[in-house]
Image (cartoon, rainbow, N blue to C red; front, side, top):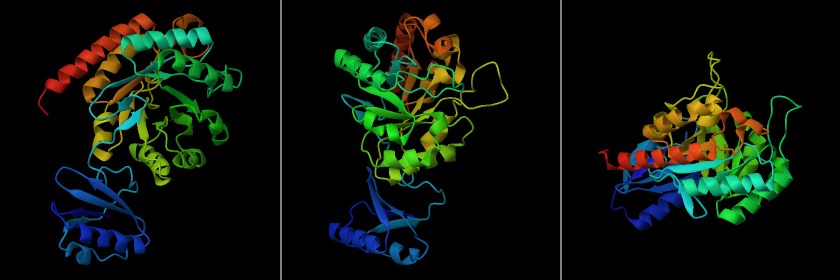
Length: 337
């Protein structure tokens, strides 16, 4: 349920209303917009008398929310959420570029790539330390050593780091990681999501291979229900009948999720396609669709990469793409809404 307050409401009546609602066992999420203040009520609202609340002097309207996700719902929070990471941010009208190797392989490799992508305009460094692989015989990542090397790259470049956690037991190793990524296979690892809800650092959740928009938003809801509102959504392609690409990138996820939620949405064209040549055009399409950012795999020697080399861009290709993306975003800012 949401309670929409009148523009010039009485502060004392507001405090009394909130206290009364909390006495009913409800959580009250307050969202202050330019024209209205909205109270999002989370909990069992079935026994509340809508007519009674609507009759209050400070109330403009009362509506029941049918969707099961509440905290992530744009109806509860009309203004876009901006997730701040170090000196940069995701959301709020910016186009954030996150780039780096699929997997950390050595100090020399990750530092060199970090310097290159920063020079091209990336403001966050991605790098896998723990790698979920379909085959148990494939490279599983450098694990805690990989995180140590990512921290060195951060010291060298100043770029905040993004890395994927596999299990809640690994979270102590991620205390100094700036953005914790939840991969597509873990999107519905609810125990992990609950633990991430206890943190106050940004969490990037990738859409599952066969997951609906609502299922993605419910995963975000798990984190937000724990008190952590720093959630970023990532569309990375879904599994369809098409086999030419690794997955099928759902560009429509950007406008749909923008309508349903206030959370920032980024696109991963690397995992969506599995082919480096397809990454630039789909990245441009994502930016044109209004994505808040892109997460792109970059490797200085893709042919020898230990993981996902075929979908990784060389630094010079990423540099060219980044300039196009920045120019496109600036152009779109000049267009009428």
